[in-house]
Amino acid sequence: MDIRTQTLANGLEVATISMPFAHSISLGIWVKAGARDELEDETGIAHFLEHMAFKGTSDRTAAQIASDIENVGGFMNAYTSREETAYFIRLLPDEVALGVDLLCDILTDSQLPAHEIERERGVIIQEIGQSADTPDDVVFEQFNAASYGRHTLGNSILGTTQSVSGFSRDDLGTFMDRYYGAGQMMFCAAGNLSHDRLVDMVAERLGTLKDATHPDRQAPVWQAGEQIDGRPLEQCHIVFGLSAPKASSAERYALFLLSNIYGGGMSSRLFQQVREERGLCYSIFSFSQLLSDNGVFGVYAGTSENQLDEMLTVSTAALADCTYSITDEELARAKQQLKAASLMRRDSVGGMMESTARQLILFGEVLDRDKLIADIDNVTKQQVMDAAANLLSGSQPSVALTGPHSSFQGHGWLADRLSA
Image (cartoon, rainbow, N blue to C red):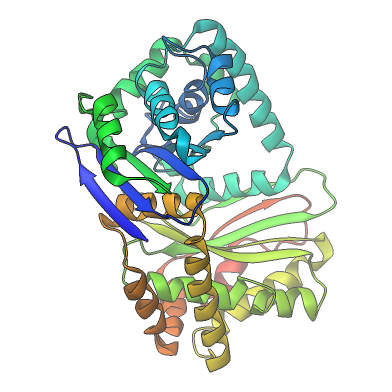
């Protein structure tokens, strides 16, 4: 597998992963701007613009965009995250020219038709409504607000019904003009392809693209807040978490291993102690979300109201135990799972495209496979225990709860449990 990168004269990055054994290719364009880069009155506009990219160019209607890719058996999609917006296509190697043409077309010549804006506005409002009816979506939105307050990281990626209802064509165009430039974009491709040929095709279509504004990001201040939504539900959905280091931190592998040991799978402490031994919930897991300048380590669980207190007591105690007690077996298993996930991703053209793009955006380089494995292997038990201790001593928790909550003893009680 050969990974090559090249920067065009206008600053646009091109990365390819040659996978000669693959029967397909994945092509994607990453824009290094996401929901956190919106202005105060733009909440949800990055996501809205992502939807509009497929709604027509000078040469293709929305229906033609869909049929062009599906006529050759391809698949096209996009997503908006906190820090990036991605547009990608998967198709057969013989159709690489079509894939490049389609992606470049929708990213440089989107017409933002007025009738499509109105139609898609309704679609997104339906998406917001669907999310609002999904408690485990709601609780994560609340957790972000509790953690980041009025910072844009505390906003919903989807926006609100009010904000989405107010966006005009000019608003969408302004956001696109601000961030969709050569220096803020990366073209990444993986599969059975030629690097030089792909670079030539991208250069022909995007080589004259001008630069745009680089996001001026302000690091958030951890709020350690509390958000409660007492809607009548069968279960209480809760997320609590602590401030964590950024993605490029030397501590990241220790954090990933800690998350695996603590709440990453069926053999984890949370799953075994909370679900298997006590039957306090059906779903529980921990997560590490590390961004360019900050991170969060958290836990999600859904449980009945009368078992909430016990579930939190066991969960917080299990995290505290990780500060002084990690076994050789737990560490070995977590390392093997982390390494296996990384290596298995290399079998997928989509997985390799995604991970390569993310690494280049976050670290400015593609992490060497052997070095990655060695870095994971070199993490010690003490480093994992130190990572747990740093989390617990570094900040007060944020907490969000959706559902019945009369048994919840409050943010202060949870903070005391995590500092004990």
